[in-house]
Image (cartoon, rainbow, N blue to C red):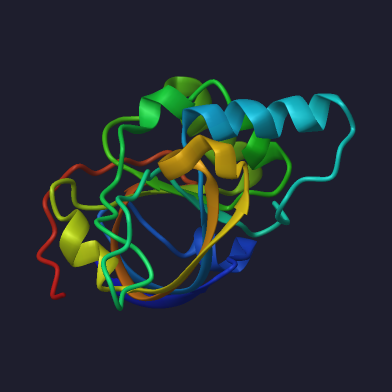
Amino acid sequence: MATYEMTAPLCDEDVKKLKAGDVVKLTGTIYTARDAAHKRLCDMLDNGEELPFELKGAVIYYVGPSPAPEGRPIGSAGPTTSYRMDSYAPRLHSLGVKATIGKGKRSAEVRKAMEEYVGVYFGATGGAGALLSQCIDEAEVIAFDDLGPEAIRKLTVTNFPLLVVNDCHGNEQYAKPNFDF
């Protein structure tokens, strides 16, 4: 198992070198989206509408953060259970999404899409939302403000600690990594 420092958005070459069990410290731009936001994104695609962010190379974090305390860009930002997005994820991977971040297992359809479209699923440590928020430098709502915590946010992260759970080679790993926050 290796440790990588990567910058989002990601490309195929980034994703192809990752193996299940690797640790990634991710820096760059990622987007938040949960169930309701995923449905709206797919409805927009169905209607031929422009999406609020570029899918090519995108990293989507399944999170509904708490309100930001004074002086911070975001509140607690721990991952939500990923299977609720499994019906949408294959389509988004086919359109260029390179990675998703959450907790829990992914369906066979999502794992197949990651292999076919060169994607990866990262696990973030559940229950560590307050610590994870320390790696978020900026947060801006860019779509669906009416969804409150589930609105789509553009996040700027630095050394966001992740575990490769499913790689694009069909492997999976659910070990507990030793993250250094």
